[in-house]
Structure formats: C-alpha cells, structure tokens
Length: 199
Image 1 (spheres, rainbow, N blue to C red):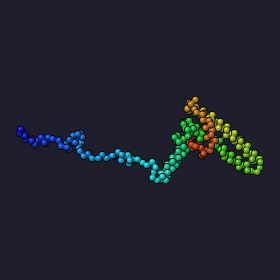
Image 2 (cartoon, rainbow, N blue to C red):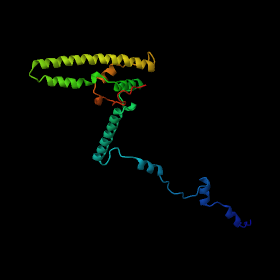
Image 3 (cartoon, rainbow, N blue to C red):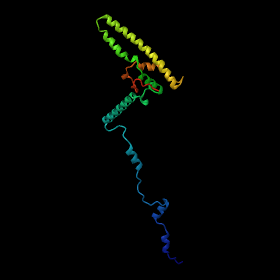
Image 4 (cartoon, rainbow, N blue to C red):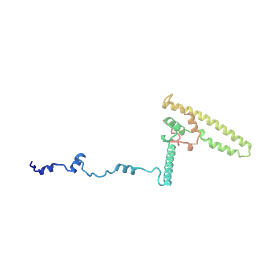
C-alpha cells in the first residue's frame, strides 16, 4: 500500500498549545499576571488605629473640644437659644413669661440687697435699729409676695389672650421665681428692656 503524501496545510490547521489555552479560558490572553488586591490596600489605608500614637495630644484635643462645647452651650443658654435651654425653660409660652417678667419692674428682685442691708443693721449695738431692720425686712417680704401674686394673675390673663384659654401653661410659680432674682443674675439673660412687653 502506497503512503499518502503529507499535506503541509493540515499541520497549519492544528491548534497550538497557546491557542488552545486561550480558547478554553474564554479568549483571555495567557499570562494575565497576578491580581493586585487594591481594595484591601485601600481599606488598610483608611483604617485608623483605635489607640492613637500620642495619647497626651489626643487627650488634650478631647479636652479642648469638650471645653468648647460647654462654652457654646453656656453662651447659647444665656442668649436663650432653644436647643441649649433646659426642658423646663423651653417653649414659646415660657419665653413669653420670661419676657413679660423682664419687661416689668418687680419688687422681689430687690430682695437680696434688702436682706444684705438688714444683716448689716444687725451689727449695730442699738437694739431698736435691729428691730426696725427686721420689721422692714418682713414688710418688704410681704410686699414682694403680693407683687408676685399680682404678676401671676396679670401674666395668666395675658397668656390666655395670646395662646387661648385652656391652652396656656401654668407659669405663675415660674414667673414668681424669676421675678425674685436680680435682673443681671437671671438665666436665660433678659432679652427685652424694661417696659418692652411682649405682644
């Protein structure tokens, strides 16, 4: 039997090893290279240590931030900013009561100076001076109480006219306690001048 001649074109039709590998891998070129874990490197770069390197510096910065926050809260409360006020000071009705008390001349706000004056009078050797001082203190105290009661009635009537009857809060005690304080010592600080009553 005679041997058939080998066709040189049939060798060209056979796949090479590189072509077979490329076909099985979906056409991706061989030798892609090692994948770079970029996500891990990014996460590692963004991570911050739980314990800072310089603890003293971190503590100093924390104290500075805390002091700044306290100062801001103190100034905000003094200025009457709603978010810095205690719960018992919040609300439009409490603001109305504060403004009404601050606009009014209150007898009780001079209670502390009068008490201090009576204490000084007790150092006089004359018993009559001491007696008159005590009587004057009691008389002043009664006048201050009457003035606080009048303030409560007037304020209640004003608040019912503004906020509606039955919806006005009970602020008589709140207003009386503020009226007994010296004007510069009140917190929040007065936001109106004397005679500038809220509308």
